[in-house]
Length: 476
Image 1 (tube, rainbow, N blue to C red):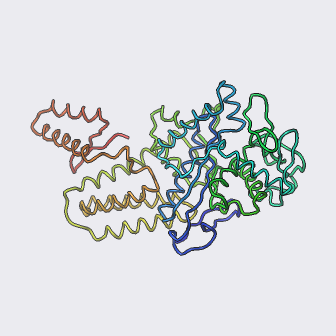
Image 2: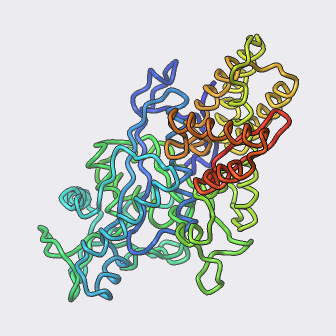
Image 3: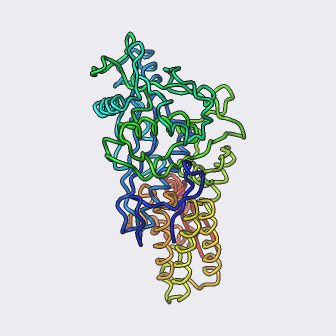
């Protein structure tokens, strides 16, 4: 099996070959180097942002699941037009302003079970590397100065536009642009380094005082951490132009080598079928949704359930449907746990668990098809549930199945959670209370049975009476 992913640069599904040299097995490759454009910390990240961040998390988790090692960086943009504007409006320093939103962002990542990556560089910590890149671009004749700012001469870089499929006729040679974000219809020389303005932070350079343009920040952080060509660069489709196009131009102009082998971009998120906006009343941060009582686990499930190259239509009804899917998974795990104290061993279990891993991997290897992978998982749940109903699953079988599901959850991140799993002591205590309640009802001690029910309810424990007896689960 080989892992193949759509590459925005080639406009086709390419085999992922870390380091650029084909090897026999994932473990034979060097660590896959990944850079993901992180947040600009000027406000709360919204759910459109988190669709991309959850995809990044799924990507790294799946690569590790497949046996690759990973060296992953996600930056923090802590200086740009937006952060400077926000800090001035609040009357605090840029670092105070951005640190507040950086901490909020990390809290949101934790709530969504997004793994820590190996590197979280900040733009302000890579200014020396930015200056090195400026010097190299200058030495190669692709930089010019105008009114204290430094611009990249896109007409002198032959490959400009290759990522965004830019029509070369649209390029306005010699016309410069200070804005960080603009449209393909207005292609101009972009700012590498901006002249200082009143009340704005600045750094001293051989070219005079100033501050970085947005695009050079990512190039500098990548160079500082990885030193050479990287395997994967991720981001939302909105970053293809101008941000990622400009990253390629300045990096390849400076160093004369391929910047990135594989570009992966996630599609837009819609809310109720339309573009998310505050004026339309359909703009959500993670904290907005949590305040409405929605579970971060369900939000994670919903945001990662659609293929990354398809627009995801986010609705509150969709979260409810995610709740239902997770309840189906939870009930499956509960039924497996209920098989304790049953004996025997079903030889079919080894075959179906091996088939689950094989079929899941083959499906997701095809352009990270997570929706298809979830389909494989739910088919497995249906099959095993039927076997449980036919009393064909013993405690030992159930333990094997749970172990296999835990392997898959290394990719999913929503089946089990360290915060949600009970300790052995807690499980034994709750089991004892449930059994005591059963006996109290049998002996008509209804007051005690009600008391135990209330104790468990206050702890978020839901009791369910089934044909196999009373089972409990924790409310999500």
